[in-house]
Length: 271
Length: 368
Image (tube, rainbow over the protein chains, first blue to last red):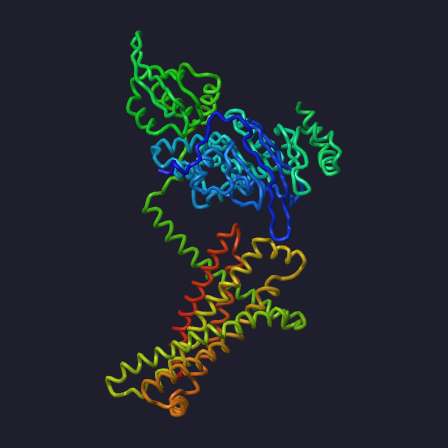
């Protein structure tokens, strides 16, 4: 048993779900993050925005352990994750799901089999028939039509692939969901539907969502708070109204540019 | 807390399953199997005593209720919401697409392979025609020949292959001489090793092995390069600008392969003869000077012609299959891999088939 090394988590932990402190990431001479701090609260949808190249994806990769930062501390569910081995963080990894930008579905497996992969990996003792049932309802829960389950990723449209990716991310009923530009490349109708799905799943399953996006409509429609990445750190976190009150040129340009104003108007109309 | 349940019969005679502990994927254990055994005669599922419930737990309750017709009692708001959500997602579906009847599948595959073989052959012929047309146009306007591209291909297809083809041919010459010496010694005819090495390499193996190596090295590269350009829409961009992809991409490769293969093939034959000569010197005590004067006596000039006539044809086949398969790429990166494999396999196959025809043909015209 790995119990002696495994991080034992406390189910009643109520502090921030993700806490990043003093993070520094650099590639060669290029510093992506320097002294970056960020907290994600339980049950919120946190949108992460920033210009291209400000390291939004690098931040996500640092948190989920795909990228080892040069300096800093990252804790998820109150447990330090930096410097821990894969075996030690396995209990943590069961509690989060990740949707990568392109979906990152395994192309040789069907959608339902993709959903079964994490279940088989983390809960190998689960009854086979029950595992198949779980995969099936997860596919439908993610808003895919039933006939999509036995299809291969190459047979799906971009929007359906994103939904299949979310089905796999939700396979283990995680508490924390990472979404990397979920609406990129979707048509406006598909993007709006995906936003609704995210909100719906977040409310049904009590998820905390870390959502990287360029999509202003998504920010207005579903995000509880927004974190702005610029100058190698998080320059501000807050609701959009709070951010608008700040006097930072990038934030002003971002939310008060023509697209920002349009998204804001769209939000008011739907309300 | 691990999930568990007990079976109870209440006063009104209804069988009730009383659940306790967390109902989640992490705490579930063997609950699904145990529940399956006591489905059937259950009227109530009491989940009032459960802790944390996730969608997997909700699904288990929903499924048990569905299969046994039981009623769910004691669900709090969260559990009710989750059960409603999974009930909405309870739709008949499959994990994998239906597997067709094996007989039908085999017949299907045979049919598909046959059709593919014919369409590929037709496609290759058509593509060859396109190359000829492109070549003709180029001849009418020689200033449009992309010399830089052609010279660059000479370098990649020819010069950079010298090392590996030299090493391969040297070893092949060595092996032919060694095996020949062992067999011919039984008749006391070791001296004919020279004939064996000289004629076999000049006539057949020099060019054939070179063609196989070039198909693997350059045919695959042609398919992968053009295929990737097809995926990134570079070829479409070329067409819209008015540049013919055949002229810009295919012809330089075609010209390079057709010119380089005879040179490489001749070089390979010579290196193989040197390898054979070295072994004859060491093993059979035939000094190099004698070996080479014997080679000049026993290898007729027609053998050199045979090699040199075949080589450009093989070069053309390699360039055509490589470029054709590259142009056929569509969809995704996986297809580039498939097409590259197809390019090499078809090139080698066609080279060997044509080599057999050439053998018959040259014997027939008396060049034996």
